[in-house]
Image (cartoon, rainbow, N blue to C red; front, side):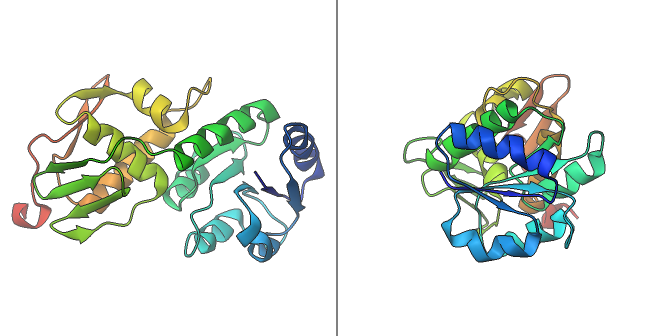
Length: 227
């Protein structure tokens, strides 16, 4: 797995490069966001600092998502929840604080790569109202129209759809989507659920089970008809 570590801070880059190299992963260290696009076709994953010398990391991520779905983990400062939300909404697969240990970051990246390379389920299509979730093709259509989702958004939708009509706990969702990584915050799940609801435009399709998690497929309403 060829990984790019994009940061101008050597104190962040050096331990990550050493850790990845010890696991046998070739690493490219880039100090500027613009350099990423030159190497992109040869990369399997990107570790992206939110604060770069030339461009804000969020701008690099947004441009990247215009033409690539390469897995990206964004490194953020502790407590910057606003940036976490913006990064996830812009297509980041995960966010990790800059103070996190290399072992934690590697575990999260391994979890992302496993779900990226392995289908969630066998060949099946879950149909709920006019929403069709194709688990094998990793696609969703609403009223016959394809809906563009990030990889993480689809994985959440597919997990809920597989358990259609059943309440799914937050712990099960985060474990299925991000892997069993100790201390993984639940905030990213809330952000992605909100994005899913906005994109699917079907009120009632994903309902909140207070204090537990979410349920797929209850009282689905066409948002246009409901107005």
